Image (cartoon, rainbow, N blue to C red; front, side, top):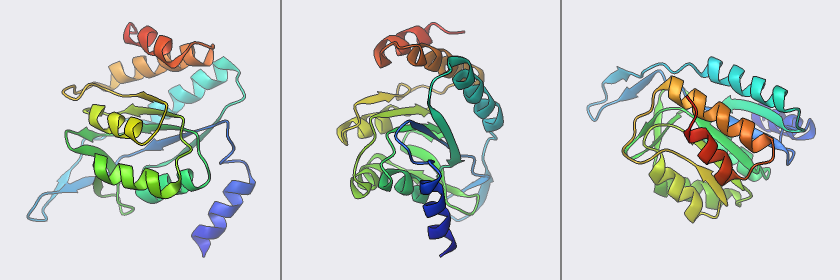
Length: 193
């Protein structure tokens, strides 16, 4: 009941309005191997990325709200259920999927098939997705196959560094918020250093 009340309060407060970029951060502390043994995950500086995104949107002076949350499948399902139109995912990526959190600080890998099921179950209203994760091309293609018009992701065989990802993200959103198309913003961001 507490979760339902919190979601209803957030919806009433505008968290799910159409001009909101939903930013999901995934920072699981550990993943588990096939024997059930825990292995620590590399720590990502999501606080720095959050601060950088907030600064870009402040500089752009656009009527776009940022909503930050942890990347769990329940959070994504809620965003979709309330008609979220823009999503930014930041976290680890693996060749077989994105690293979401399981709700207990552990790793939950969400592959293309599970993502397609999540997107279909929530009723797809997403128009834009930015995936800031290594190996995210397959997941980006899953978003496209599900009907998302505009998807920004990384080539399948690429592992990205935090500093390169931050420079790309900043340049992309500055260009996009200044009125450039997704394609033109992407091209400009590829030249960022």
